[in-house]
Length: 245
Image (cartoon, rainbow, N blue to C red; front, side):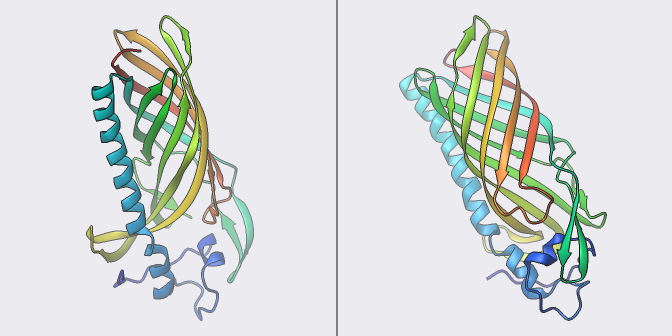
């Protein structure tokens, strides 16, 4: 069990309170049990990320063994969502912040298994910590595993249409806890299942190297910390196709 040793102030405008237990005698403080609730799924998230890493390695080995196309890329972009909204919480009326803005770097890889059909995995995170309600530092991490169709659109262009499932690991910092796999960490994770759909366009500019403008729509389940469960990520990736286009 993860043990908490530091209490953290909760912002007056935070929607976290509306989804935690409501019997706290002091609404300006998160109770120890509430913080433990936020941390309880961090180990499961680590396991999911490990599975994603193992899947990428498997794809590389499979591409080498069977001669299938394998693409890997590094990208940067940002996210957008609806504006902040208000709602009720134990302490009265609260503001639900918008999950938007910031620089999001990340990695993606895909393996084509039958003609132009394959699988894709990706991991993107907020480069620097944001301030949740101007007080609490936090960082969202998005990861997904998708089925993909990549039609050839011309000599130097390939499209991508994909969809699948994944999750959002929302980390709140300045919380000290112990994880048997990670040791001591200074954050607590609030995890949400999500579906995603998206598209991209590979533009090959030198041999098998490409630039790819891309967009993803994340449909996040129970994203109660923010004003909406719909988050749009957009950006561009630099990648390389191993085994041809």
